[in-house]
Image (cartoon, rainbow, N blue to C red):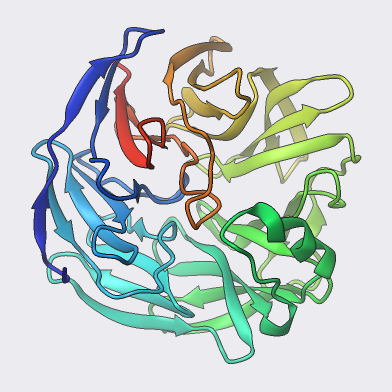
Length: 370
């Protein structure tokens, strides 16, 4: 199969047995399908099209799905694509993704693409890039190639990679100029999940990656070019913080706080300017969670086998309800996160997209909120 190839899915709709909400299975079980990383912009502003990844042609390539008709368009071809990396620009005209050690910029109406940055020799690209709210800049983590621990597509390399204390740096890329600068570096720490603060392109949120009970602290902030990063929340080894993201207006960041000793599991917001922290409410055990555009709702995916649900939070009412069963095993299929639900709101907040392997192989589902 090649770039521009057309296809079509037949949707299957059912009622969730626990909540009665309408759930639609968007993909088939013939091959693996999943959507991009949960805080990446993956849907067009009119709620019509979804970017997703599939191995239908033997490699993991990127596709566009019409959420009304089921029609698909193949956007890329070949191999070595980071299938969780794609994200749309705010005007829906371009797609950004990483391939091999390159950041690619694709014009969606023509599928013409160009390289806007290439990781230099001796370094490897780590994880997914983040884009600024004005689509001008990207941030990504690079790791010294010699420090990489090669994995098997599962979590076996996770703790050894942390223990390696790799040399990592955060690169800030000017998309227009096709150039990158070192925004921050640490010669003995695994860095991950860089995210540019909406409305403040020089402010980058990132984490110290690794097992939650082994890292010093997860949440860090740096101004581009500053040699010192700011720890946003010191933590003990009994505390776990996941999975941080900026609210859409850039005012605060959100995270889930877990205390293994007390059993506390709470949603929290933090203003990095004032360091004021708000404990919003107690919540179920989320692996990932995200707010809608105006932060009136939050969706999270339960990871405990006893909590195989997506949960919907009313932020103002501080209440949580079961949205539907996601039923995912969280199993790896060559990539550690292939079957992670990674729930994400549509732009208008009327439905949620998620991934699950509950039918035997990772596929993409949609659940309505209205």
